[in-house]
Image 1 (cartoon, rainbow, N blue to C red):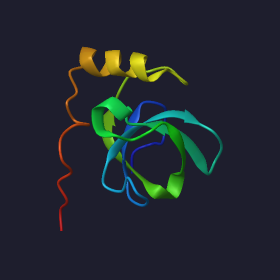
Image 2 (cartoon, rainbow, N blue to C red):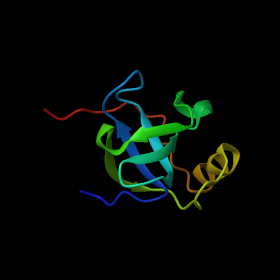
Image 3 (tube, one colour):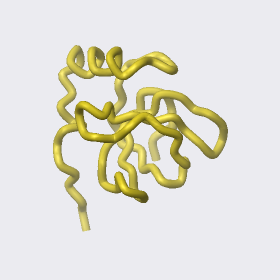
Length: 92
């Protein structure tokens, strides 16, 4: 399992945004993370999420802790990661 760290792209596995991808912005404590979509990309708002409700992927964006959605959008465009906008492919 990939490490839970700032910039890691995850998939939400529970809640109203289940199946959508998000980026870890900050690690609050051992149980909670601050995540964002950003909302302009895939509709995931910046919010606190339980670590057990996220599945980390292998992909990572180089961002600093606590960056705004605008700075995250710039980092996504710089790295040309269209990964957040792609639909999730579930392997059974």
